[in-house]
Length: 198
Image (cartoon, rainbow, N blue to C red; front, side, top):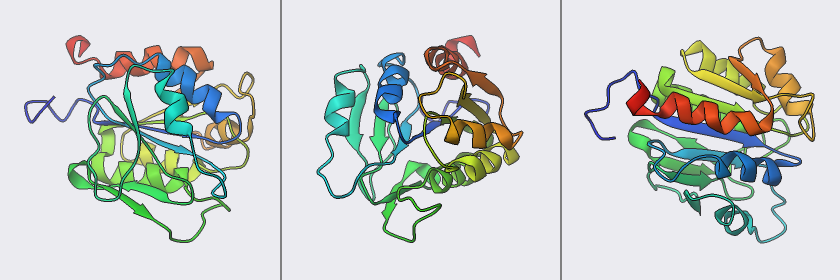
């Protein structure tokens, strides 16, 4: 898990969701074991007018540590870092997290596109990007960035997603490696990140 890991191993899982996303995130994160060797970075579109309880809700559904991301914090293996409401979440070299209040992207903040693009820049082919249920197009440009750097893109099957907009936009890029029912995403992520199998 430290420097001995080769560049062939994945280094981060970035997940984006919007409408219907809390249930979808609970399902995905619930299928990831506590020894996941990479951090999980999450953008879920939330109403900034209300105090968010998403971290509390998701803690009850997964054995991973779950927290709202903090500006200047580090992305830690086995930990879910969630973008706070109304803040873009970015990651830089060494896993340093940055929160910004910069302009809305596709009418939203936090933006999946910005998260995915920052992961592609920081980790390149060691990135796994997942797009789950949601309306709109957020995440589509980001998955193209991840794929262009050699990363892996997983999308919830639009036919079974609660809201198909975001998954359909991602699939429409042609930059997707896996299109899967929600329940099948976690096993694929576990398989990709399992050092013992690689």
